[in-house]
Length: 278
Image (cartoon, rainbow, N blue to C red; front, side):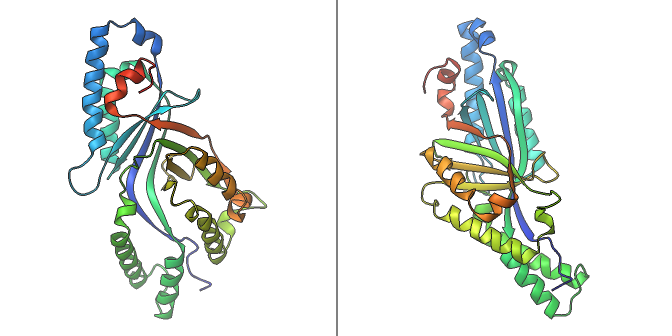
């Protein structure tokens, strides 16, 4: 296995866009009530259709959140089957009159990703036993078969519905690539062990939090994005705190900014813009 690839196989699913906005509240308050109502009605109609998603097949949904803190006021989360569809969702938001009162404060582009450390090790070993050299036509065919089988089995996780939980926590993260600690020079078997131990922590919280991991290498400034969905926001603190004590996080993880939002029903958008509690 000395010549086996160092890169584990991954499965990809829904493309994901996080849009964070600041709301021009002063300008909104200066608008006449009739204009506000027209703008809200247009936005509610568009967002309701996006929240509903596809009638069949993959959900391809969007969700609206009221963002807490100074980093923004509104957070829109979009899951789509392609970057083109994600771009269409972004343009659909830009076409709304409401966009005249929104300033983008941040965004993040990624794709739902499932890492296959265990399956990769088994597949690489089997292909090597069959005498196939890495990246040979026979090797590539064998890998394609593994990806196809796993993608079919994991389809619900690759193309998920947006959880209906009350709270959302989003943050990006990297693995260290420093001189003394470099994740990408660690042997794959060791990375597999570390990720297995890391995953055991998350499984202990499976009954109270939903986690969706997305890959963003080549798409955005960090390597992964993490979305956590829960009805109790304290779960975010407890889960992330506990995970920082496992080896893969303590030694190799770097974290970006954290964003917290409360799920808002589209029909409550007008009240939210009026700074009323939905």
